[in-house]
Image (cartoon, rainbow, N blue to C red):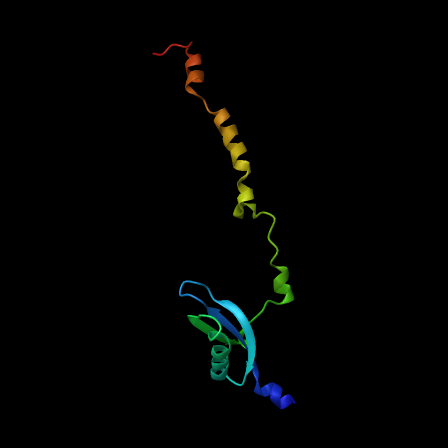
Length: 116
């Protein structure tokens, strides 16, 4: 039984439907080597749907994040500028700025209302 487990390897299959689309994960399969994995992926997938390209990747070559790395994913509190809600304060700031600006009427009022 252990010989069977070491003989087959697990492969992840990704496909691309059109030249401009992105690759999507479809399924995983067991195969003895990369060539056989590609043949099995083509037989199982390409006859069902139109496909432009297929990638077959050995699962041992796919690296996932560790628990410690996942803990670093939460966003920092000072990153609101990256989302549109982070710019909500600008309207208020712009209004304050416009109210603080000197307009023509105010400048003319200093001279007694007459132009020179």
